[in-house]
Image (cartoon, rainbow, N blue to C red; front, side):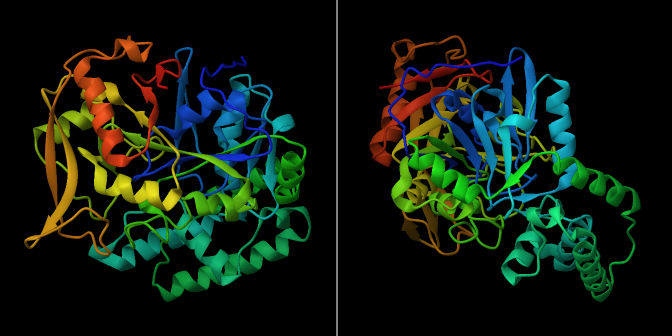
Length: 434
């Protein structure tokens, strides 16, 4: 059941951490790219996010959706780490892991979990729903997975960590649950029952104890000192970063390169290449400003052709053309060294391809990311479509001229090379560019 993949663009990665990040609103296809890149590395590590981040991988006609487990788990010889910057729901982790085990993957020898990662309790999920309901029309559009309340408690220094399940856990859990229940009473949100959910959650805690729960910060430091290589797998995207995204319509974690350092405990000088993943068009899920959003037939076509529905939530993604304002900003914030363009084949049938080159509001135009992106409209530059099926292409020499021109236009505007292009959903449908 194991598989491996040799990467024709392999470089020396010894003793460094390369980061693979979504650089717009997430859902770019990070899982597939990590799966393709993983054989080059000794370790694949998740540094942020929780079970709201679904990374979809398709190979050998099978589809896997990973939520908390790193996407390198399918490669036989990689160590996979869930880092301290992550939040974990034991019941959802157990369901995910058991699904992989049933498919023939032995996780225990090659999956380590940080003692410092925080735990998502059943009451965190209730709090998530209660807080969203209290916001009314100003709701952020969370997944309801308890991510925000868990990170909030982390910052407030009141949370439970994975290491807590190893000793004295029951009393700590009871105290935090009681605090949550009081908060819910204060919010007048009392119509809930977590009895069955809590039972499964506790089963998940017992299941997690079967894995290696360790100080992954020290472990990673020692591995890097030995010359081992690490691929840091991001979750969500730069525009959902708690500091640098479209606040308050953001995630609760640091999704950028800076989050790699804090979420894994690695030093900045250990960072090597930063791979920025984006789609050949744009999508966003949930509420928040989205200047390139299309409300017409074209937007619906992008959604249907691209199957733009959340891997975890099933929510429909809002769709639009590629956004150079957001991409330039994300490249700057992350120090992106190489770009990876996903889902190029979704645009195969369009006669005209539009590119957002600026935002405009009340007669004012900007090419840099504004503090408040509400009310801005996209300014477009049009390019001819290629109207060719890309899914059977295996080398860059086979690219239709219009598609090659689209890539080169983006590179010119973003001042960053596009080194890998995805032309279909399968892990083999990727084309390297030099």
